[in-house]
Length: 152
View 1: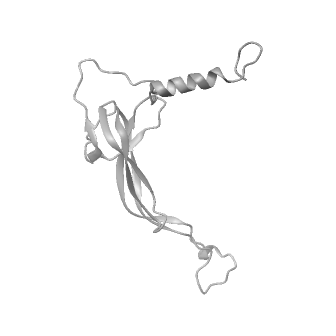
View 2 (view 1 turned 180 degrees about the vertical axis):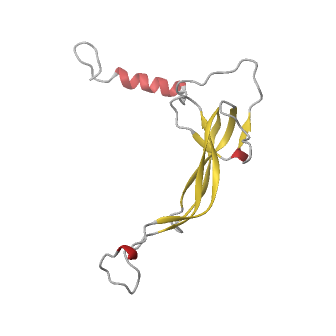
View 3 (view 1 turned 30 degrees about the vertical axis):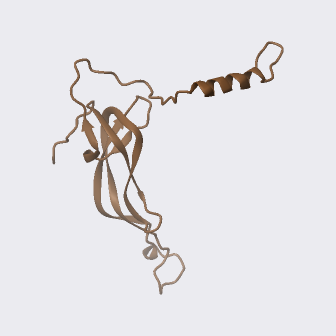
């Protein structure tokens, strides 16, 4: 077995999210990649293996056999495995869902003198422009209020 390129706790960055899902047209389970709007920086928290292949629907009975249920006539739905892929799990915060990425899409960050800590939760905040702030302020000034001055 080959030694892993990354260790749990390594700080890395990636610009890609990798998903393994079924193609709706062919029924084949394959890799889909999508780019991130901003580079994701986080820690390796593990890896997972996803199976690739062709999905086969099950049948209740074979053609030419009686439609009455017989145990030998039943074939359950299954995945004909043609290979597998290892995806690394990258966390940006303790409570965030890990990002799955292929090894070739991940870059290890250089060692830092002061090791940063993973935040409790990574939140993406979009800064408001001054125009948006003024518009929101005007909207709330005319909003109806109750006896105690609270918005209704």
